[in-house]
Length: 274
Ligand SMILES: [Zn+2]
Image (cartoon, rainbow, N blue to C red; front, top):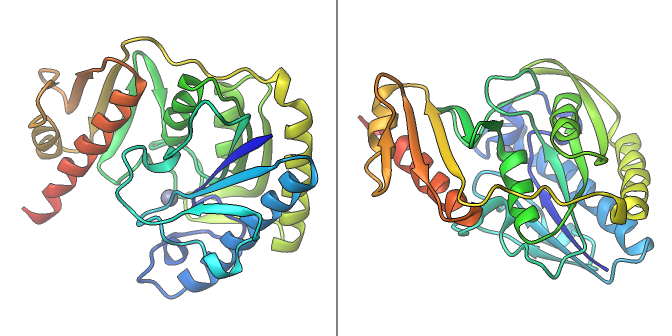
């Protein structure tokens, strides 16, 4: 058995706000240690329940948050930025299941630090389904026939996962009180919960279906302001839906939609310089 683990940061135990997940802020060093221990709990349970290979992908911001020297030795780690498939880099049909940990709710929804990729994105859609990072990443896993078996994060991320992926096991390590306040488990208890839920998800994995993406999906991203939409629409194949800040791209498959999303969001970020 081969498992893939994508680890984001906003949904890690005990973290209420951006002072923990922004590498220039004072709480960040604490947060990355908790994040690493959380990944270790999942790896430990995966290996203890029959995984021969575990690939961990650091999926937050510059994607170099996990402390490799403190990571469980039985996992390989993808670390560093610029990956064509970003939060699901190197996920392919050879995996038996995917686990998303430290995840958060999509933009515009309740949930601690809820967002989709960057501050500039108000909504993302694949065809008419509103999705966030969780949904898009689950579609990529589905493209390769891989089921997402476990999602860990705050209660809102878990609810988003359950609405999208029938039968998925979830582990809510904290409850969102607002976008910047949580009621959290102690990290020690959260690790025990993650070990238990990882074991449960592995046991159930053959009954959880991959989230199959639509063929030739239409990606639509609604930006916060028109300037962001104008930057995103510079990409060939993109167009702004008249009278809106929505930029549309017809993709040949979900992998192309994913890369288009990365480029559009990156272009939209240019508005912070002008
Ligand atoms: Zn993140």
